[in-house]
Image 1 (cartoon, rainbow, N blue to C red):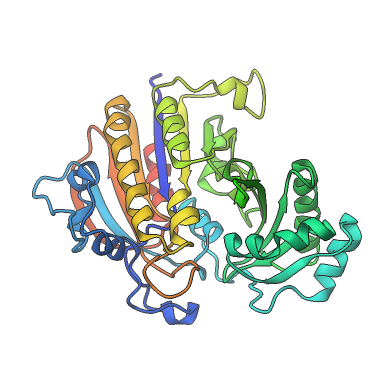
Image 2: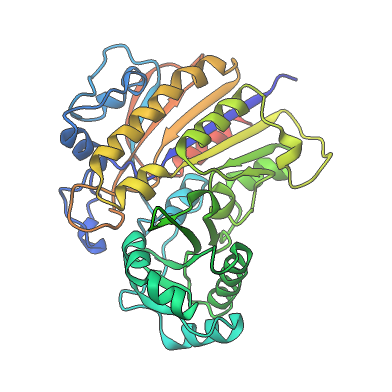
Length: 393
């Protein structure tokens, strides 16, 4: 039997316009991550996304419309109540949420913090407020070194973030503390989406986050996804980047973390070429799988390094870098491969604030045998789960 594969690449936070209910999430109707990044940069050099039809979705400065696209393309609106990574990825995989994850605009209540201090033995915490991660570690680094207390902070999203200098406190201790926090937040039914380990080091006299050592401890999916369906029926589900964390390992058979988009793109290309050492990254050694595979990649730099830091120039360069890998990925695809390019929410670096924005997202669907088509506007990121299920049937 010939292999059938779906490659899903999520360009983290590359939204394409405000949802109608964006004000309910603290956002303005003007938010449109891709359009505003294009405008800021006076256009982007993305010839592969262009020929796939991205520019046909709306007017993006510098991304031309094409009369002969090579892919199907559409705008997806979100059904779930949220604008965060977990909500977006879960919906892509088939779960829609009618209950938003809990947020803590005034910091976490004492019952959570006291329990965290007691169970970790960390002695105390610093911050406990919404903050930009880069700013808070710079502000509190001296106090962190003096007290050895972890820096605990949140954002407009449902996250419990723990930052510390791993030259002061071991990385494994940070991971252990995150696991304790995850258990507290799960057992207490606080409905917090993610606990995030935010390790940093002092590099050239400046606190610098170490992306490759970041870990996300997500709440477990509330029901099975299309990933579980493929895995349970004997297929492979390869998570590249933070996919393993987002789904709390549920529905994943192989996983590898990345330190940058470039690394994630290189690994994705290797996976498509069947050059990834799967046995080294498998959860179960020596297992035999059937001919169906999902390769699921999260490209986080657009969000983490540029969206949250209001760096529209960097955001544009990151999209251009992603585009350079699309041609070799498409060339390496077989007749029974399907490529899906999408996003999980917005994070417009040109509007006020540093948080995610509640936006629609693009979806581009390519295979060597596909009929190019404008699919219009589709309700639900879970449209992707539907086409994955149908393609791998």
